Length: 444
Image 1 (cartoon, rainbow, N blue to C red):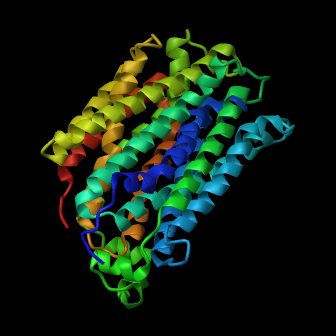
Image 2 (image 1 turned 90 degrees about the vertical axis):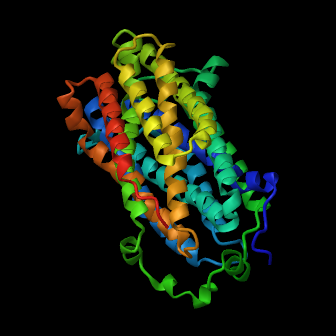
Image 3 (image 1 turned 180 degrees about the vertical axis):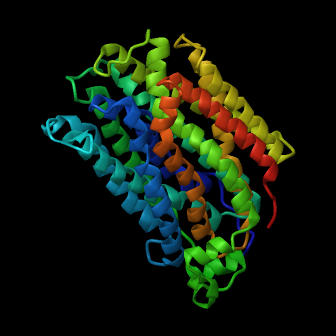
């Protein structure tokens, strides 16, 4: 087998096409979870707690998927079996989650401050995020498995484009269905039909896209994989016996220094996902806080719009990132522009002007999607445990979200209960992330 085998543009697209559908599901979750739980009766000070479980599941699941798939060699492939199972479970949960308020669950039954509908929604959220993580991780691994170093930048750029395109669709689905006449209001304690329909359509697109990649992509069998990467065949590779903890201790310094930056960046975005709905409703809809009101639900739709604008900003900025000669400089500039976007939300009271704030935030998101994985995969080039390391690296995404979610209620109290103030704090976190970029060690 020729080691320098290259893939056509169409093959590179096929490799990541399912990511488009997976990202639609992730975008629907990100933009609507706070809205759904607020509708089910959650107090604003509780909202951040609902965001603990998704990253916690990712922190548990993704390293395991990496470890198991590193050792999986079967007729269906190495990573593809996990991709398919994750997508099927995600589809089932996407049908259940938005109906949490429509199943006649007793709102009188309260345990640990949550009614039965919120408990149902919480467990649905656990399964949704777990399945999305299972379906998402194989796409990153397959690029590392099957693409030459010369084509990696193009492959990850295609994946980034499909990621942001999927986000764009997911964010806009609720407002689109409202525009064509599907109700955006519902009785108290129930999720509006526009949101429910969005989850149904998102689930359909997800399974279609994943099946396309599953059927179109042929993964490398063990012998070809070993020859392609110039490593020992799996049966002879002694590092396969290393456990995840041992691998963590062997991780290159790039793993840890980039992880420090990740901590501040992902904490900031957790606050954005949690408090954007309340902040926009308060700033741009005359201080509305009633989650059952038409104004609050209209603000919820607008969250999808501003998140879509953020995705557009990310797509545009991603095309400019390769023009920077220094990766660390690009990282710093991106995070500082994003920080300015976060801080400006506090002062903006026009729903159209606030789109500019989220456009700026898109620059930080573009850098977070591209630069950490570029730095890490270069440091891991030639490692037979690429999947395990990428799974472990996901902990640098999940852990900060868990910390931010666990402390969100306390921070909100310190901010005087101001949800716009929480986004100002998010801007400060991105500044700290930019400062920490100087500690990144670029090595192999």
